Image (cartoon, rainbow, N blue to C red; front, side, top):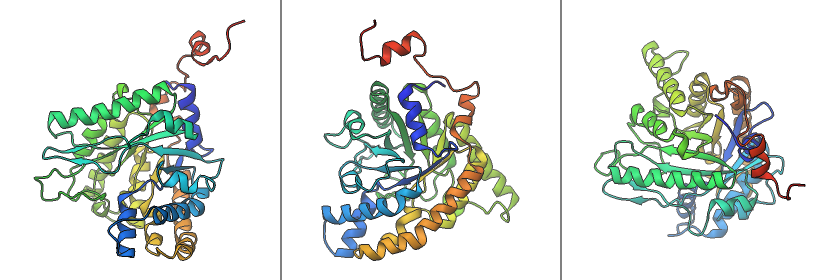
Length: 351
């Protein structure tokens, strides 16, 4: 696996000095919209309220992360002046309102936003969430694959790191079907693993995977006290996830409880994950203090920060540094090295 100069430095910016990822996600939109509407008793979440929540999350928590994931409409605008300049920055490109059809979900970019605009913001990486079912109809799969691929091509053109998040979901005819941003109940590990395998092809241009647990977080057995057969089965699924990714990967939290997400990370790190990119598992309890932003910030400082630091310690001690991933077993190499490097990056005429 080769990396261009821009992608190499992008990954370094997202990681800690030891090469692991301890990344904070604040790009969530529907969960925050719904929280604000419920607390305010209004049919719509006001821009100022969404911005206030995201600014608080960024101000209190971003200093404890190796990188921040935000979105361009609320979070970047609200928190740009509180983002630590020595931390990495990821900006999301997918529209939160996916299109639900009788055959599956369709994803799109945020209107009037692009990889080029995100690069101009100063971001180190572009992140995209693709809802995906490998057993959906061919038309649905083709749309989602084209969506991911065209963004990957744009990331190559602009030499910026590409982070792909994949989530399986229940189809409309399945009893677990929901439109919420929640972990699918009863999800099948083979669908999660096959989804990752489908996008591991180099043609999609993915540099870093943001992945969900192949087993529901609440159903993961305690590796120290759980039934040996179930523990072994869970470990096998995480190992299969790592093989499918075939490049550095991190875990998302999908809103799991604090203890549950820490257990997920234990399995993931044993399988070779290089860190986490998580949001609600870290800050959702504190967000319940809205609309009292000052109280929310106190709760973030008292509860979310210590939890985040515990995840960071676990990551530092047990996660695989991305530079030591098997994809780089023969050593890190820059694409376009030698004469091609000069032709790609030179800005002045020769001589």
